[in-house]
Amino acid sequence: MFIDTHCHLIDDGHVIDHVDAVLARATDAGVGAIICACADPKDIAIAPEFVSGHQNMFTTLGIHPEYADVDARDIIKPQILSHPRVVGVGEIGLDYHYGRDNRNAQIKLFETQLAMAESAGLPVAIHTRDAEEDTMAILDNSNVTGVLHCFTGSWDLARHMLDRGFYISASGILTFKNAAAIRDTFVRIPHDRIVIETDSPYCAPVPHRGSVCEPAMVVDTARVLGDVMGIGGSELVQILRDNTCRLYPKISLVE
Image (cartoon, rainbow, N blue to C red; front, side, top):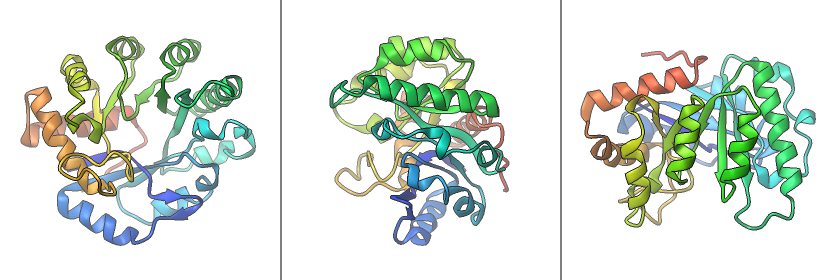
C-alpha cells in the first residue's frame, strides 16, 4: 500500500467536505495510510481526534510561516505532541516567495517549533520556499531530523539535508512537464531517503492538472517517481513504506 505522507484534510479548523468519499477513493487507489498535516493554527486542536477515528491515519502538527505573527507555544502544547497519532511537527519552515518583510518573525516561529520537536523527540516536516540558505543555517543549529516536504529545491539543498539525515518528499510537481530539473535531482537521491506525498488539495499530478488534488492521486506521482528511480511495482511500494516508517517511527500500520 502507498502512504500519502503529507496532505491537508483539515482547513480553517474544519474537516474538508466529503472527506469520507475522498478517503474511499484513496483506499480504492491503493493508498493504505495517510498523514494529515496541519499548517493553520486553527487545525491543530481537532487533528488528533479526527485521525484517531480512521485506521492508518496519522497527523503532524505545525504552524506554516504565513502565520508568523502567532506564538506556537500558545497553540501547540507538549501534551498534544505525545498523542499516539501525532507522528511529527509540521509543516513548519520559511517562505520568502512574497517577500522578506516578516523574515525575523518567520525565523522565530520556525526556531520555536524546532525546539518543540526536539523536546518531544519528533521529526519535522519542513516547508522552504525561496529560503534555502536560512533554512539550512537554522537546521544546522538544531538536532532534529525529518523531511523536506513537497521538494522543489536545488541539489545543494537536498545534498545538505541528506547529510543531516533528512528525507526528501516527492509531490505531484514531480510529474509536471517543466519539472525536469526536479526529476534530475531525485535521480541523485538515495532510494532509502525518498518518500511521497500529494500535498492535497494542491499540486495535482499529471493527468489531473487543474483538478483539486486528493490522496488517491499519490499513485500517479508514484508512477513517475518509479520511472525516475528505475523501479516499480511492489518493490517501489515497499521502499516507500519502509522509508516512511523510518522517518516517522511512531507510525504503527494495521494491515
